[in-house]
Length: 492
Ligand code: AMP
Ligand code: ZN
Image 1 (tube, rainbow, N blue to C red):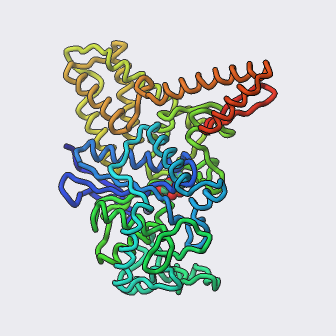
Image 2: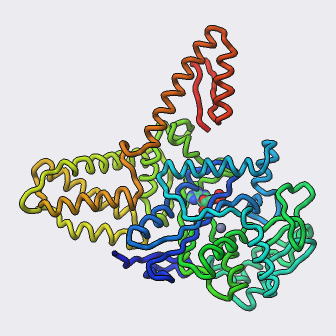
């Protein structure tokens, strides 16, 4: 068991030797998606980064309890304390129940992560399933004197908290700066100070997502769910908390304040933040429309790229960058990753066919294995690991063409480690093992056939059949577009 792991801790900006609270066990909490829309590739990058981390921790022998929540209430527009709940808004616009929105996009999220071969978390709690815990947590914060109630809402008193315990340690923001930079309250808000944040909001009469509480019929503030659920499942202090870089402030800062207000202890030992996926140099985001959805990438149905890329190539592309670096999505970069991925897959195939010799020449296999571990032990440096794997492929090619040699023992150990790092650590699948890829191919084939049957029906003026095909497909979010060149389909 190799355990000299260094992790970059956002709390102090340093790489630290990882030491778990409980020997051989790790508690890891990662903020999950707000399920009001299809996840875009940017969201996926963050969850793939933490999938790599989850996989590697297990690979080196830790038992990991990985908690990743589903935000299905309380996340208002613009990440602020005012405005409409994102899920309620979607439900209103589509005239469906909020829980229908939640179900649809939770399913989309899980399906998408499965296509990327991401492992399921150990626990996937929802905000609406933990309203009681959140109310209890608010009561504790009020008891400690760090929250105030006003007109049925409850707010965290940041200035009062900061007098006892410094606020802003994660983001490095000073309270004076926050005060200086914040806009004055517009008179509509009940908050005493603009820095305060909502723990409970009284629901307006038209706000459909509401629960009874000692203060009002209302809903919890967004930051609260993660504190309530992480402490419930991982304890007052746990090892790792993760999320995208954009969650550092205010979300994670507020989580720390909430937990410290109650327990007076630092809740998390290592804060890990994954960097952003950009498109055209700008952050991929749902709100701005600057994004590509995973299915648009897999089917090639998008206006940005002129060919499709499979989930495994997309995953490989993301892992070719370190999780703390920004990655810009582009056709060229994806094509380079596709070539690299295919080279690795070919290398793995060749490896199975290599013939052993008496001795090894050309690569010290033990050193190579050590360098793979060292890469991952250095803050999960997957690009360096992949570079070592390319070196191994070069060597495999050389052995295959008789230029270099490998002993039986070394062949076994190279093969075992190449496969472990490829399948278990990087979470990649070769095309033969990738069921999704085959499924997608089969689905596309079947849909093309349906398009032909529908075209024929239209030619024969059998509109009953052609409408039946279109309407039935629409029900399962497959949209047909008729144009002068014939019908095409789009999987939403
Ligand atoms: P949300 O559903 O908006 O709460 O986001 C879910 C996760 O995706 C959070 O951890 C965000 O930090 C992350 N995220 C959002 N946009 C991007 C992006 N462009 N690149 C990487 N991660 C992102
Ligand atoms: Zn969170």
